[in-house]
Image 1 (cartoon, one colour):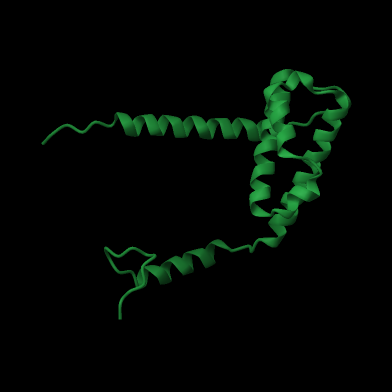
Image 2 (cartoon, one colour):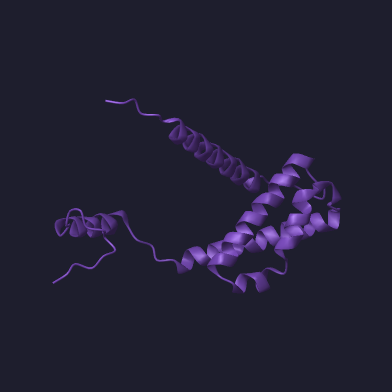
Length: 144
């Protein structure tokens, strides 16, 4: 039996783990509380703007109406990501206001989504497994 080379799989796994770590760090940075008028250091500003950009992109995909409601364009985030040193205190206040709008919109979106309990999910999966046909793609309709 020949040896199996897992280098491609290991590389993909490493890349996925790095991506998860980056997303986790960006989430932590977005939850950090910035107090008063004082702007944080360069790394925190960059992480904050990147997180805003990701959240903005996700929300626009979910609801295109959000782009007009936010009062800010995605190109502006890209400008600040490239050079966070150019942030002025007024722009920082504006970014904090955009962040609060994004958080409020996320809460509204959570309320609109249906809340399914674990018991309901388990019952649906059990029902699906009872009638399971093997070696059939689940997206295909069975022939009668």
